[in-house]
Image (cartoon, rainbow, N blue to C red; front, top):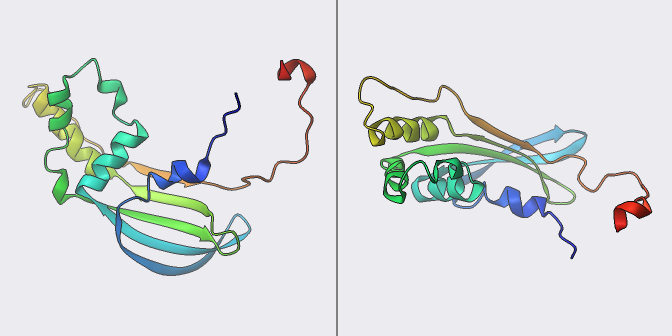
Amino acid sequence: MEIQYDVQNSIGVYTQGIIELKEEGKEEISGKKAVKLSGKMMGEALKNTILETGSMDSLHGLLTEEQINSLYDGLEGESSLVEFWVDEVTNEMVKLSMDMTAVMDLIYKNMSTVLGAGEELTMGVNQLLVTIDNIHYNDAQDFVIPEEAKQ
């Protein structure tokens, strides 16, 4: 069975639900001419991105589903800036940057409440930036796969 990783589809998790999309200009990213775009992601789209990326998977088993769902309380009012650069020739995304600081800070503060920690335990996030560089994709030099690896 052959399985191929689809980078563009994986990056798409971070671009679903972007609103107020606008072109910011052109830049060179790792030798490629790219169009810079920006927009914001809000509420439900943020929650879906967090869920689809598996960022909170480690909490399953530690918290109930109801507790996990309550971590997202208040998220509808939050937004995150998303910036991405698209190759002018191939239309493939070459870079993505997303500021998740406010969103994850809210979630961690909600976690303090869910755990009943009160004033004894405060959790927060000072900075959380997601940056994905999608460079040199399909640029590998020719190589030979050893026969023993094919078995």
